[in-house]
Every structure is written in C-alpha cells, then in structure tokens.
View 1 (tube, helix red, strand yellow):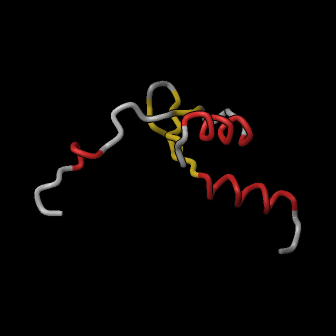
View 2: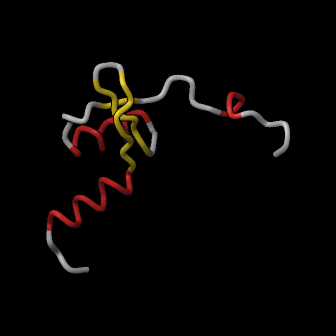
View 3: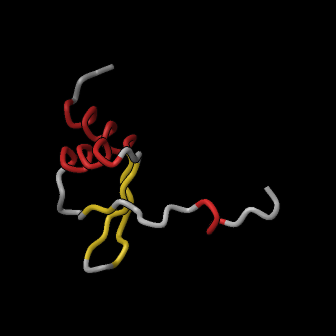
Length: 67
C-alpha cells in the first residue's frame, strides 16, 4: 500500500444529500447511485455523513420491534 495516494482512489464526484431529506429519500438515492453512503451538505458545507447501516439502525429502532 506504500505509494498509493488517497487521490488515486477517492471518489471525485461524491453523492450528497441534505440533512432535511427523509431516510427514505436517502435510501432511494443510495440505490439509484449504487453507493453505500451519502455526504450531508448544507449551504455548500459538509455537515455529516449517513450510511446504509445508519438508515437500517434508525428504521429498526423507530419500529421498536425486538429482534
């Protein structure tokens, strides 16, 4: 891994969403764009990050169903 720069493997056009988007909208965007996470941007500023795991956790917790 020596000699491999982040710039060589990074995503140059990341997929973004707004913190005001719904979980469902974020999940749909992830499926459409074939990505596992979204950068959350507000006023051209990075304010967070949401992943498939975050969405799944929120849906399970919200449903209050015991696994």
